[in-house]
Length: 288
View 1 (cartoon, one colour):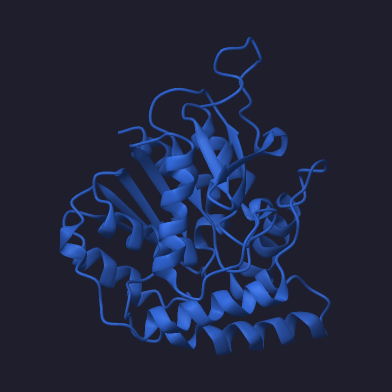
View 2 (tube, rainbow, N blue to C red):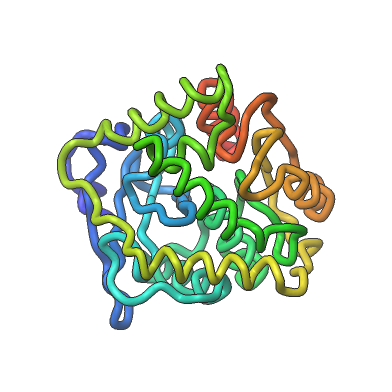
């Protein structure tokens, strides 16, 4: 699977140091990073709207990589991956399946956030045998109430961020209060810890296409999530303006025996604000 499996290279457990790799499947070259001890079932991370490899919170990735082979990737048309972004979440799930198959894995665990959680749901519904354990954070079900309003919220917060010369994630992911503002600044700072070999940015066209896909997903008929029998951990903040927090509760009701964690006084990025509490919980769940 990996170049350091048979070599004597030390195990990399810091996301800031994770080697950048590519794998080609069909006519698409997928960019990815891997870290942690190789072998066993990998944990594949599914990233959020407009995000590339550089948008994962290292505090969460590093915690999982202490004991697990972790893979983060740019789906088709995102970051350094070639091709064009699909305007449909199900097609994104098909591309993710192509990427995972190209690496030679037939069983994975999934850690997904936001749009990544939507992609992950479509993947597990279509390929239930592929996924062993599932972590769904800051996300909601296909056809979930008000998911299609993400587009308006996103554009509004980008405007607010531009006017204050801030990162849009400070507005989109965190409450604008005495707790949320410092948590936002700290999160954005952590995303800069990797200084070499950083990913290519998201194109404006790709970003708009992803928004179109999310709107379509929100307006689609619901998936039958009763077919998901995998152990599932669902987490969010209690004030998610992007994918309303009630949708995490909706997922919890629909996925039998799932576990739900809602963090207080936090938004879409609740897992990042509470990374010190959440990271060990996620790592322990994925080790189960």
